[in-house]
Image 1 (cartoon, rainbow, N blue to C red):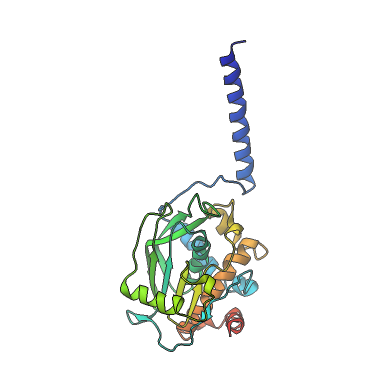
Image 2 (cartoon, rainbow, N blue to C red; image 1 turned 135 degrees about the horizontal axis):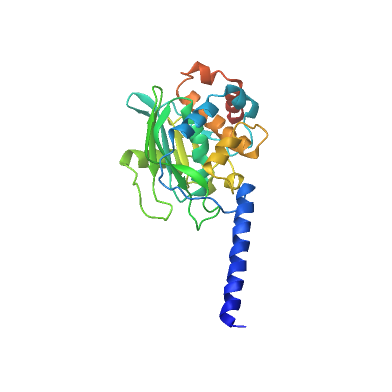
Length: 273
């Protein structure tokens, strides 16, 4: 038999096996079948779904802290960070960072409780870092409006490690004072990302949940799981969102009673004290 025909036959068999494996992985929500949609705008329908999840108080109370850990630390300052007349939330991260990737899910849900994103884009973390290709969003070129808080975002590098945004003097000063020079931040976490400053009242250094929890899922699948309180995805993402929400309530002096009077807020803040 012609050897070329043998090689063609082997190639066809291998191709069939690969296709079958990909189909099985996709149908089970696992594997590496994620279709990258880096910098693709999030459709309005998915933003509305996320808004519904954010405003579902029964869900938030049922999850509470969930599986979130590494809670924010209070800075013991009364000098609230104000921009445009509102308490300000400063985020410093990078698109390549899988720990930033998982953190953004909770941030988006929490922030939707106090305002709205009119522009938000899909992103995946680096393909070569730990937890490769974690599905997430990017705050670069995002647009967020709230009557209660200001939001400053800084994505320092792309998911291929190219410089994207550089900190201003103000942003760098906040990071230095409340992270690098903050005795409440463990030494092993200083200088890392993600970093979130909640009006200088509390700060988040590093992620609260493991990026592994969303491995193998795409954005639609993750959102589809978030109404299931028994899902590890919900326990992680809604749990961290609740923690972030409690920080926003604290920095705004509970300016939105509909959100800040929920039982989980008091519970989470008691864990931090």
